[in-house]
Length: 144
Image 1 (cartoon, rainbow, N blue to C red):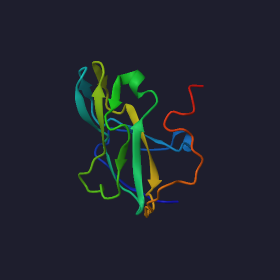
Image 2 (image 1 turned 90 degrees about the horizontal axis):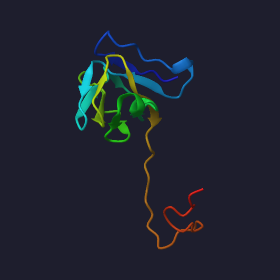
Image 3 (image 1 turned 45 degrees about the vertical axis):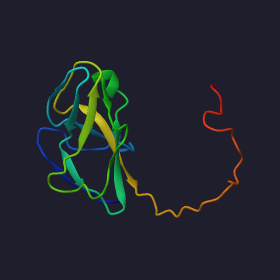
């Protein structure tokens, strides 16, 4: 089992844990109250910094209820936190765009993350033709 050093920037948010002790994703919480007006962008502080194990990165995405509950969209779709973002001041944040006026309270669960092994080094080999079956291009599998 890998160990991850974690720094909390406040004692006012719940500590990270697996939901029901077994989920693949771990929820992250707003570490301060944030008000956003429709059309506004803010970096929402998540109150943690981590030293990821060598060869790993974190993927941060909204929870399935985030848009319904708060009307915010994560502006970079999926946040990637690489292993070098591990200093004392490297607090994780959620870049959010508000589609309506909203308030996110301190300790609200707004996003989630998982740790993923870095992609291996790849050597690209240029060719004229590929060996796989041609499916007809983008969107070729139909609507149903």
